Image (cartoon, rainbow, N blue to C red; front, side, top):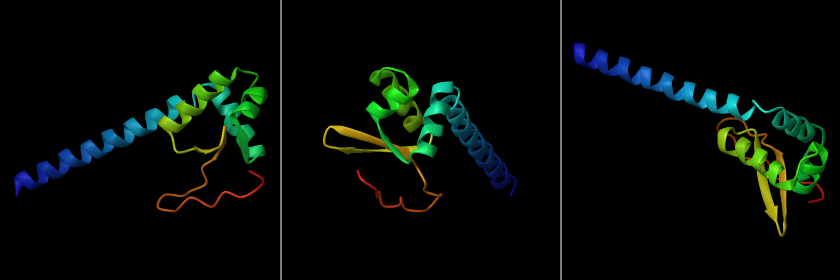
Length: 107
């Protein structure tokens, strides 16, 4: 009986550690002011191309791309869609366990 309880405690501690790691990743993704500006721009305009984002943020396209990658790799806050040469960036609107909504508009 004692072994089972210790095993459950170890598993709970492991779960806490995993949740803490994910929280740290999200905080790191949000640590840069330009990434917060990027999220605000996507809140105002639902989807933007990388070119539009770089213009709005006043950064080079490669810097905008790096910020987008950081948000993609460390959070579920945004998603991208590649159509031809254009990469569209938008806020992720899915709730846990929910499918992504269909992308509409004039893409």
